[in-house]
Image (cartoon, rainbow, N blue to C red; front, side, top):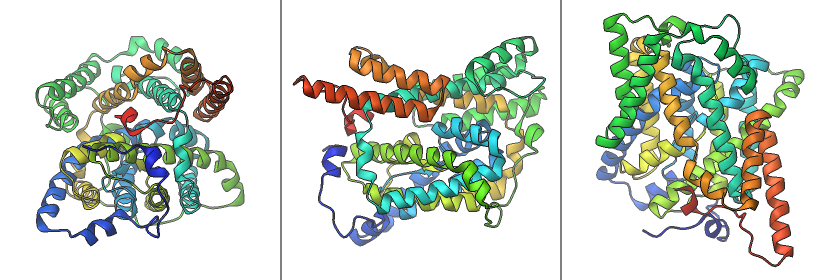
Length: 444
């Protein structure tokens, strides 16, 4: 299969179709019944994967599980309808857990919704200004560094539910303080919660090895949920902590908008927009590498912007392109954006028809799901490879450590600055620079 690098695509001449959604292109080419059948199967496959992930990510972000479903349903539909990639699947992403949780702690859900809408407007503006082509200049060690840092933070955020710990107060956000608090709560460990989380991880990893086409995450949720319900195990569930999820969806509404609130959430909105742009375009590059297609980066940014505004209007959290679900969509045989739209429709059907069943899902199960997600996000092989050169190691470790101990913004900023300075130094020395933008191959 012919693979096209991000650099080659971004250097292609701009055409009148630069902002045209890919669904228009697909329909112009001719969309027959066999293509629709393939998209139905792919959409259902992705929905099965997205269902537990959307709820788990929302809970880990400090919100309720239904807000993750709203994001996948409404935001995901708009990403596929308007996006510049044939195969992009939009929804809540693990990379956002850290910054959404921090925004929730500072501003509450109304502030998160307002920041999400503002980020949407920023993404639309970035796309219209054709900034999408420049995302590729973020050094590859930076993307690996902040992704690995986020993975560490996500795993740390799940320790409480993985072990069923009981805390007397709120769980701190800072990593060291969090680990200290969790260590002090070690005597409250719940052996049943541990058994559920270990079983979840075991089912997911076991099925990935022996039955890779089976929906391991959903099967783990069903099996452990049945075990808790039938055996009456004393563990927390979505029902006991959140009262379940609604069997309907809210009407669109705006969060409270004042100058003071806009000023307060502006830094969070910038982080939502920056990470959303990076994640969505990297995901589109992965899909291109798997299929030989070319995405339209600026059209994709505009779509991501509209999708975030739409998600927030219906009470959903941030939306971006999701690499794992997009790759699943491609492997399931999707023909075009209708698969992504159908994935959102299937999720809506689940919420309307089977919402009461979600009350029985153990929180230890969702913590196990996110533990697997964090392990996959860590990019262990790429991390080790980048440590072999001191230049890439400096950028990687600066980004990684600052992301963990200071913040995502500081990690990306410091890593990008170091990467740029080292690039210029190597150029001045007349040497080829090892710190370069990543091609499609490097993200696979």
